[in-house]
Length: 448
Image 1 (cartoon, rainbow, N blue to C red):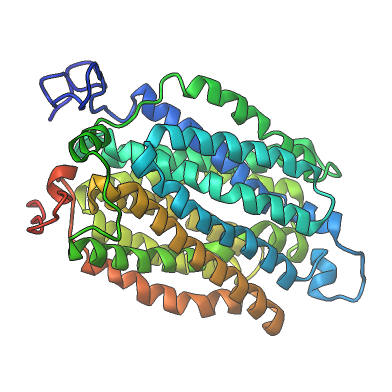
Image 2 (cartoon, rainbow, N blue to C red):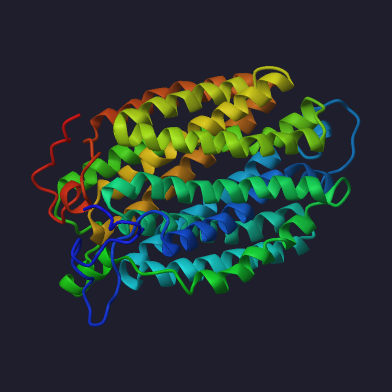
């Protein structure tokens, strides 16, 4: 289904109109305003969600107690176990994103996406008024599932409103938006300067909150979802789906998602704390890492999109996730040079993973349960991140170092990553081919 010449939008002859009288929705190319709006919402979610990790040294300093006994707690401001547990509670709260995202299978993608974006950013702004560490944890525990839901549904909309030729680019766009927001949180912290604390950073979430008024004007409900909902009257639940293949695919992809966040949860959350509190890096140096991460992540997204479309979804996801595992270990294995190199390699490989994994999450499951599946995968990822944060913090305290903790987590991660090999290849298939409602028979991978 090629795009009409000189347009990002498919012509009416290319695809049947969405169900419903007067509907003008069509499949789009990845640069359509509706997808750009979804990416803009991911920018805000990324900024707000990553600000907790970016400001972790300031939060620890604000709520910790000064000590000079040379312990890890004295250098960090709070015990690493306390910090890890607090971050784990915030991550664990993301489990609520599963039912919130699944609500979009009943209420619609657009309405749930806009509601979660508004609520999540508003709570982040309120978190600037935190008067203690656990109050900060409680507020971000409320905001986190809302940010996760925002990003989840932005990906669902990107996958459902594009053709197979544009799907990897659309997934890369959403990932780039989230990554841009995360990078802006670190840049904003550096611009705010020393001694400002975490409060001004959280207040800046008001900017993407106000921008939602613009995004809602062009954001569309996916035509595919409208057709399925109109045809069925109401969408079946994931648990009641008759296909065992749906559950098999979900189990394998969930295990791989768990493995990924088991290592990236602690791998990304402790970078600023480790660099500033243990390697004596300045705030400007850690901000410089984030600035470098922007173009590195962009290169990774471009490379990942090419790998997903040419090599295939499964081999691309497998190879890049193994690189992420090695890079996380490298990050905590030595001095500032290894931290910078390992972190940037993590960013590069994580960005390269996103188009393939995002495309698989869309292409492996029927439209009637796609949002619910996306929420389940995100929840499984949360469990992996929580387990990783708790284990990493405990191992770091017990062993007296971060490198051994990262190495210990890498072994199960590498083993679980191999489960990608049990999934069918979906490159080159439209959603109606790779994931029909009955999911039987299994589609054959396209010829290379």
